[in-house]
Image (tube, rainbow, N blue to C red; front, top):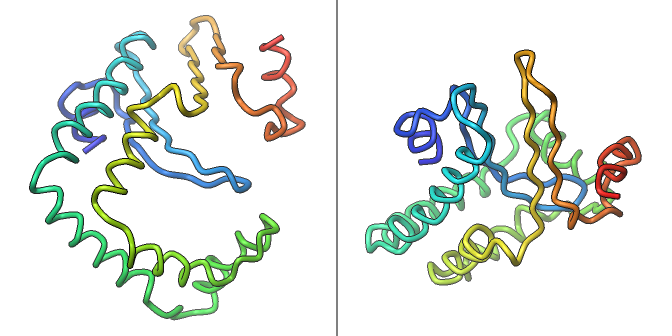
Length: 175
């Protein structure tokens, strides 16, 4: 949906995608759009409109309820699959070792959550994550290329204790 709306329909740029990510125990929802044609304000407005419209038009529809249970079943199937090779297990376990969490039963915990997850809870989570933007911390980085001035815009409400030591440039730009 993100790719279809932001790249194919709105033609914002060649690169456009959404994803969830976890880095050093901090979960995030990321939207990346690379545009040569539109200014950053236009791109940010398009992203915010997409997130709101997706919630109102798609997630609140009756069709979403039936597709939700289908998606839960597919995710349950994926999480239930046994590791086929040592590399599969390594790919699953190594991030736990590196993060220091050592939660090696994560798949089982996720399966348990899927057993109890309702459409209403999922809708609430999405709305809190994307629609209620004042609730979450937001980091927006805008980079100008092709001989244009490099500009870095930072929302200074980010959690400083989670910023890597190599990011002192970000910290100083908020002072």
